[in-house]
Length: 158
Image 1 (tube, helix red, strand yellow):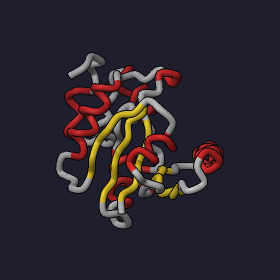
Image 2 (image 1 turned 45 degrees about the horizontal axis):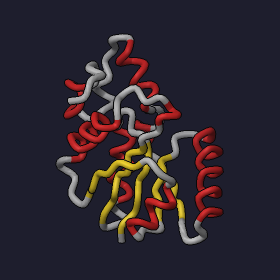
Image 3 (image 1 turned 120 degrees about the horizontal axis):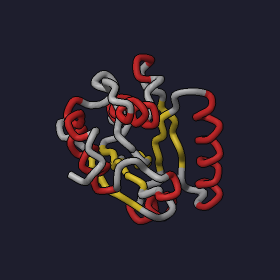
């Protein structure tokens, strides 16, 4: 069985990878679906975010990386997948994700959302925290996969 793991991944973090590894204990395959999300004004362009995710997951089998710019339910229907994985770090994440999950279910009643928590050591990591630290010249080596470290300071496409 395959699931979708959607997000902006701006950039991918160790918390994201932790959720991927946990999801692979439940699902045979994961499609990481990187949203264009222009309304969120991503720090990195879509092509670079995809490349960073590819680098970070190159040693994890059964992971496919795609990009999308449409409704998640339409993407799920296109791939004939009715299960979405979402990561939760805190109660504030749950409130937002619950609303999104209900909205998706209202659009397509066959879609299900499964919420996974990252390990405690990754629970505080968010892409926005990583971006802030990178912007100020800080060390994010414990927060992101080592494969993407050399590429984070350069906002241009790889």
